[in-house]
Image 1 (spheres, rainbow, N blue to C red):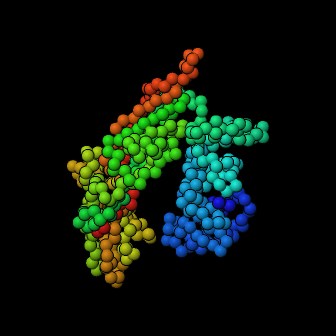
Image 2: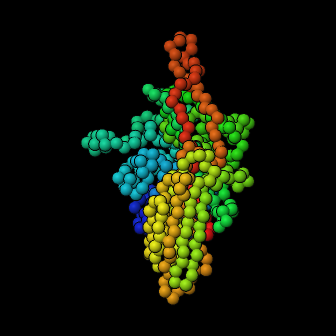
Image 3: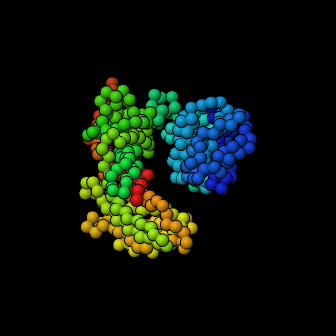
Length: 429
């Protein structure tokens, strides 16, 4: 399976490596560097690279390339999913999965990688189990370990390791029981100049923060579950129940986790929450720029954190524009216009207009640039997905001589929050 892991920063330096079987020379990364030079951006590097003796499979996160080296042919998605789980674990432990956080916690990183992979095969990847095996770093523990020479490794096997719910540790207790669910959706769309939708789909996730005592059993139902497509579940979800009733039934991990991720395809009518009216024209020596942005099908919710980005043609020298709202910047080197709009007031739509200066003697561009839009809408799921109800049951200890456990309802704080944001949202001009 996985023989080695190399971590490469944006400068091309291998700042950390881990080997599980035999040591593989760093020179194997030369094949990766060759592919990197061919790519236009970090995300465009081929994720699977075949070499004469190895396969290099990588992901790019937190400005770091995590490159796994395999000596035999393996399912690439299996390795990619494991690498994402590694980065998620670093973020969970250190609050950040970047280079500085990894360098500050070298020892814990090596301990985590040793536990997560056994002889090249994934072993313990659940956060709850890892936190029982290896204590997360804090200042007091670091000082004690430095003085006494002890390590973060636990002396006992995690309680969940041998149970049929390995994602949850036993004996969890909280003074206040809480369960919060965030329904987060990203809309990817291409809109033509007339405002018609060329392509649109939605990628969604449900992130949870569950802090409940004992061994809770949760049931989450939706008003309209049939719109969900390509659903990917956390291992805690009972898949048979979902297939039969379209209901999520699960014993949750303790703390933060991703319950499901899903896709809403273009076969469903995807509502576009914002519109852009572009009017960009070029002529000899100059041009005109006029863009208006406004809300559309937002169910009365405020559109906020709006940012308009436009990569202008190379012949553009400068831009002299006037915004009715927000601020704009134009990078004359990268030729990128950025307009930070902020919140959109439906009564007074934001507008950016002005003149474009072209390099003297250059012919006007043959095609207009595309506009990228970023935005957020709180308390709205653009797919129309709505949580119907959330039921919680759990085992609560009783002092009865005949019965040690009874099954009764929780009475926790619980809440559901919705968020819609732009993914790759592009408007053609």
